[in-house]
Image (tube, rainbow, N blue to C red; front, side, top):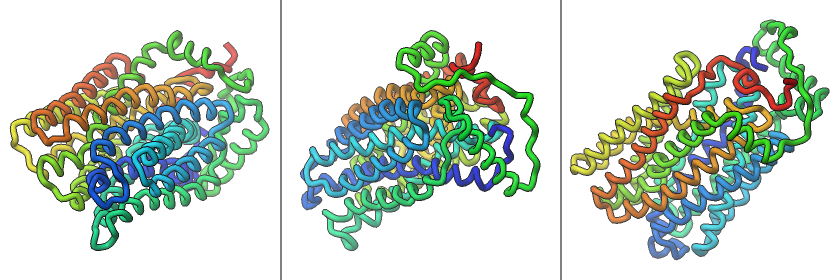
Length: 466
């Protein structure tokens, strides 16, 4: 799989699996964009803006963390394909029921369950992508796919402009359509995803070597037909495996703590840093624009779409450098660089030198750099631990790091941003910058040079003969 040239088959994998981040971006942005509208009289639900961007946002992230752990364990035990179909189905049902919300408790419960499905997607999808994408392209593809979150965010921002326009839709209908359309988009992805195969690596280790061989042969035949090239011989590259059915939590903990403590520290730092920064922005940016600059609710989407495009441009233009310049300098540079830019933004905002337009420009610059680092957090933890624990490792770091930064972040930043006070908002920016700076320094010390290396070379499988 690692020596295959790029082909149309790989594009199918990218579309079928990578589109989950578009859904996540859509979900997070829609909530931020409609927060003010939901809190207005006549919305059809009695809820405050702080409850939407604080409580509901925190519950979404808590659900994502819980779902990552639960489905991550199932993914390592029962396979990638079964779980990335189930988790998408959970998301579809939950987001559709969110559109039917009539009270705070209903909205919060189904935001939790929507996050529960999305969190499970992270574990199942990242592990499958890294095991199916050739090592030469793994870094840039993973970075761009994770960065596609912002395509969904841009779509959500623009969708909110239309949905919140009361001349087109009543106040109690428009916001519901944004959630309903997310479910429709997810259904389309589910149809494409049925054609994505199970990971041959997972099948081989779990006693399904004949099916794994057939799957690899079918993929190789298709790639030959697509590219018209013969594949390099790999008969001299062997690894002996003791097949197993499952990996226990005790063994997973030992791998993280006993065998790879530095890599575990690195994973925590990267996830906590990006979670504090991004949850501060995505859940509260609409409040900052409306409270600090009196931007109308139905115009917020224009501003948010701009920073979303900047976010996606970062991975698109810089992603290939993670395979050429290398993981360590690029990840450290993105985290530290975005932190320095954010410190400058915090100072300018606190001094009253920014408008809605110039703040958006500053955030676009910050997130152009930061988005590559944030995407690299997922790439890092999916590469540097043994195959048997891959999905669970992704889930573990995502859950711990994102719940730490993603639950505390929205609750703290919503409080700091709710009254539009420049000093308090600048403090929120500074907290996010400090988290990113600390993570960048950890990458400098503990970063792993993973570019161009096979997954088995980066972390020997637990099932491999010693």
